[in-house]
Image (cartoon, rainbow, N blue to C red; front, side):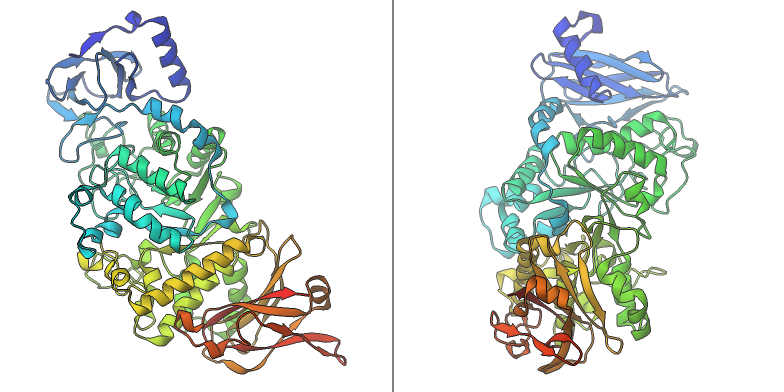
Length: 631
């Protein structure tokens, strides 16, 4: 049975352990010392009279005492891991209200019950992983997924009658059933949409900042998913929302009974349009937001964090958080979602990378004829492929040319959200649908382009299967469509083959396509067509010639001339071998679109009069073709 003890009754070793953990920023919540069975409970309140800790199983309560300004504490012994608790607060008017622990790592979704978790042991276990990491920044290829809607239909589609498997959490099902599909396509990083407890569908309305969503699985299951991913060479990045709390069922709203503009966590914070902002100027809020990140890096060993809508957080606070995280986790990867993308977040606020939304919108504008040849010739082509001004390394740009959850998700049953240009559809649907040959060719072109451009490619779940219409969480018909894989749908596997192969080229030719600097040379824009050829060179005496044709015009009789400078010829050779063609027959195109048979040597031609070396190539419409230079 729980028994309250005074802090002074602790042994010197126990006090020392507590002091050491506090040096590591573990100051609030339920701090559990498993070896001694002691748990220190701390909570921040401002306006209430009294606070009691309540044992969730016996209902015994323990009055908490002030230990500093607005911090109350009680020390309990004989505590076991996973025992339940909650708080009762007596407001300034005498009303008694139940509250959850804002620092709880695990809670019941429909009640105020929180679980005692031995997260100190998890931190010690993950120290080595947390300090080293497995992120190869420039060589990332990211697969974005929403945990529930990605795996929810798997068992029913594959008629999995294994009772144990049917009872598995979403985390565990992904680890056991889906990691192999992601690895098979040569993705080496998974970005998980939010996994903390949230209201709504997508995860971007957090009810608590550190509590893993019990509807997705247990803490053990989440750790299992991370370990399984790491064992397969796959990094894990998670989305975190720090700028606002949930608009409904918000556990921090009017927390201690004080109800002015949402109470102590939100008063005078303002609004984001999705929910109330936190009051960022309070040191207690700053500490909580830092810990919301620290928990996933230090206790679970994730490899990186994407900060959702970072422009809604003060820049000084972003820098404070990233600096503090960087001092503890030097090799972790921090992504800022900023609209529009801004290299200042990398140079000044401590981030590694930005989501690049503009490429997607530029491509949509081009498809709608809102961008034309003039734009292509005067900056659009170069910024699309070589990157935007101010970004100096490829890993600084996360490319989502085919859309992310914001553009593909739809809460309006397929309707276009009013005043929202995010479309709410898979991009294949915008181009004419999966049964349209040109649409499929264009999709192949775009994903291939994202892999050879200046940046890190990212693909949202389902795009690799040519999944159509839109993504939805509630509508099972618009969850991830496992039927396409089960039925070995021909169009699906053509696209999956392309994704697998271009990802493999990006990984194996990382000196060329994942360099740590802008290595584009010979960037030749066709002034009359949406076509460009360029060379990317590596540091290991290797280089690739790439031709991108976003036009419907094509040259199929080896009648397109690509000139190469004598510098390139002398350094890398006067021959090329075609190693990739997004219009290959195995991807849904046709093999005659190759310049020669795949792997055959193509010799250069020389114009003595102009001192010009060139190659005559086939350029199919809507294509990316890659040639390796050789001697």
